[in-house]
Image (cartoon, rainbow, N blue to C red; front, side, top):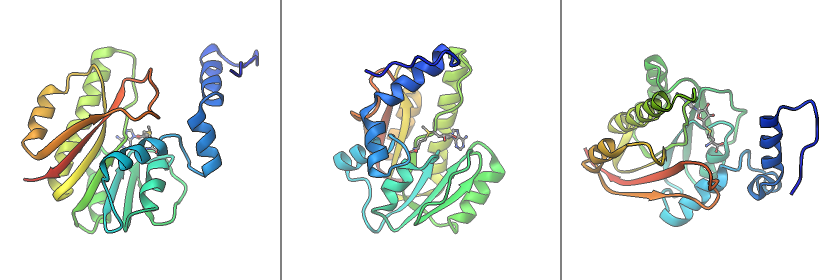
Length: 209
Ligand SMILES: C[S@@+](CC[C@H](N)C(=O)[O-])C[C@H]1O[C@@H](n2cnc3c(N)ncnc32)[C@H](O)[C@@H]1O
């Protein structure tokens, strides 16, 4: 276990750095050329659920720094990706910098998709947290609701949604609504998702209007 002894760093920076240095997925991502350890979460999801193939068109929401886009673009026909942050270009990925919660950005994204529906929507978006539990929870629900609304505009019949959700947050009502439009919804926590993180993923299959 590597310990960080640099006196100039704050305790939380030391903790973050030590976690990065001791994380096997961070090391593996570096060796295998993935931009983030998050790539392994999508690889596990693909391994278990086979969410896309060589003919798929995939929309990657909250894509930066690009691990999920890399994994998808190694397999599928087309990847369109969006993030608030800049993302250096990747082969076979059309990237747009923008805010998924901004109406104008959404319109631009729809144009980038040439008004065509996609086979798979991925959302690894996580809202910025402020530390106030109720506010943070509302932001998470609001983001997930917007992703779900967006499915109704851009997901093909039979399409798949993979979205990050947070354990402990009450998404019950929203999941009940989603069950009316997806034949099957599974919860999955990949091995590569940190045990201490409340994140988990839903894999919702076979979208219908
Ligand atoms: C956990 S990271 C995604 C990691 C990525 N899946 C990968 O494999 O590298 C979450 C991302 O969601 C983005 N994000 C959060 N809210 C967003 C929003 N409203 N619109 C667009 N991107 C957003 C953040 O900027 C951040 O880059």
